[in-house]
Image (cartoon, rainbow, N blue to C red):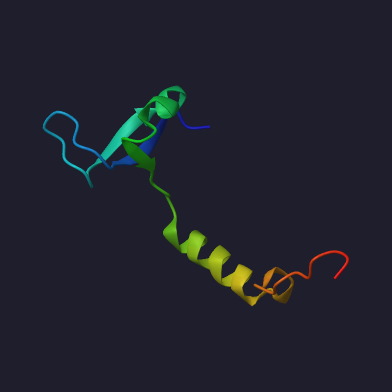
Length: 69
């Protein structure tokens, strides 16, 4: 696990404004909850995972029938 995690600010912090990226120690990430969100290192991998999930018919948005009806 890396020693630092890249996070994107969602709230102003000192002179830093929302949208700026900061590096936070990995063990401090929980303290940044609500002030920043984790930045994904490889957005193409995320897109591939989303499209793979969309193509899988087993995970489609089919409504489930209530039990006993």
